[in-house]
Amino acid sequence: MAKKSAIEKNKRRQQLVEKFSAKRAALKAVTIDQAASMEERFRAQLQLAELPRNSAKVRIRNRCEVTGRPRAYYRKLKMSRIALRELGNSGQIPGIVKSSW
Image 1 (tube, one colour):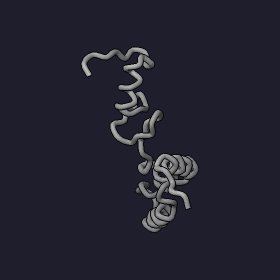
Image 2 (tube, rainbow, N blue to C red):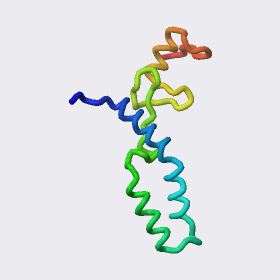
Image 3 (cartoon, rainbow, N blue to C red):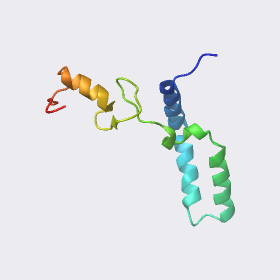
């Protein structure tokens, strides 16, 4: 069996999040609803726990779209600091000018 990369794992997690997002949101709404009975809220909590663990949005890791690096990620640019520096030095990102790095 081939070893699976973390990038592929993250892509599968994103697909699971998209697939179960509506169901997860509905169950979470029931668990928070104070008007619902305690049994209904508990049943919704159990159903939520039965969903795949990787269908939670919290489990998705932000990764650089250029290199796939998970650390030092800039959300606005969707890339890591290393990729930003390399592309900035080569002049491929408009508006980025080398100041003192």
